[in-house]
Amino acid sequence: VSVGILMWRQPPKHKEWKGPGTTAHFYEILLGRCYTYTQIVRPELRHTDCQKIGKAFTSAFLSKDPCGSTEQDYRPLMELTTQTVPCDKTLFWSKSSELAHDYTWVQRDMYTLEDTLLGYMADGLKWCGDAGSSEMNYQSCPHWREDCSNNSVSVFWNTVSKRFAEDACGVVHVVLNGSISNTFDEKSTFGRVEVFNLHPEKVHTLKAWVMNNIESVPSDSCSSSSVNNLKQILKTRNITFVCQNNYRPVRLIQCVKNPEHSSCRYNL
Ligand code: N1C
Image (cartoon, rainbow, N blue to C red; front, side):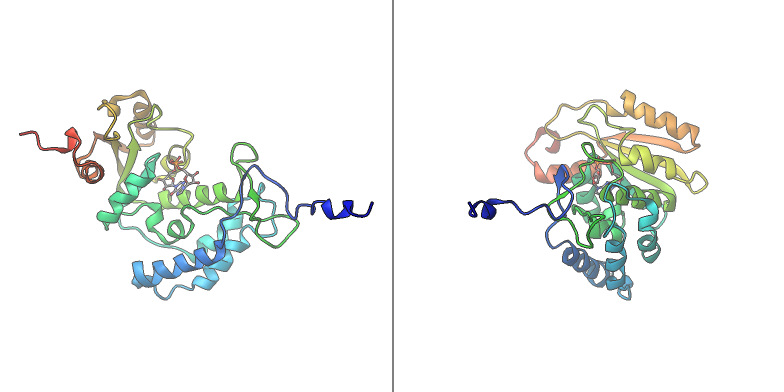
């Protein structure tokens, strides 16, 4: 009769969610990336206090309900990490993360959010805490759709994306994916947050580069209805819209991975 007790499962330590849990070794990765970025990638930032930034980051979500995350939670972190991107050098992207980052890796003077400290630190990671514990939840975190949209990760990206857009000046660029139906998606971070947080007094033009996947049939994506929607939104915001299909320098990046494709060969 007493053997049954051995079979009882431990009660869960944290609340259980539908999404994957905090990335293993989250804090170490965060700190390591902070040091890599400030000591090696941008040595002009070598006096940055990464310990302080790491603590401000985790304080934003530990011991809190991961479905009740707010911009204010990330305020202390934001105040520790002001970084200026030169005018004309901001690159936004939507559904084109890999291509945009491959491009800035080569075109070193252009910056995506992941080429700034906070974006670099958080890129690809998952994190959440729990109201009833001071530890991270490595078992599960809220799923954006199935649990809550104001989860600790989504609120972070909304907050940093907003500031990234507010800080932009001159001509800004965006890489859009012309191989999907919603080339401009009003519900994406770019469409929801960044477009509406550009300051028209500082940003006079937005240039969209609509890129088709090499393997897909060329389409005239700049004239699609979703891109036209972006054009209309910018018009009401007094920002000039310019659009280019398959902007050649970015197409050449795609061609490095697919050199034999007909669109990458010289047409003699
Ligand atoms: O929703 P999206 O694209 O339009 O977001 C991209 C847009 C970029 O211009 C960035 O400045 O918003 C910013 N951004 C990130 O930099 C970022 N890195 C990682 C927004 N989201 C980011 N992530 C994660 O990818 C995050 O979890 C978010 O939900 C996705 C968005 O990718 P998307 O739909 O392709």
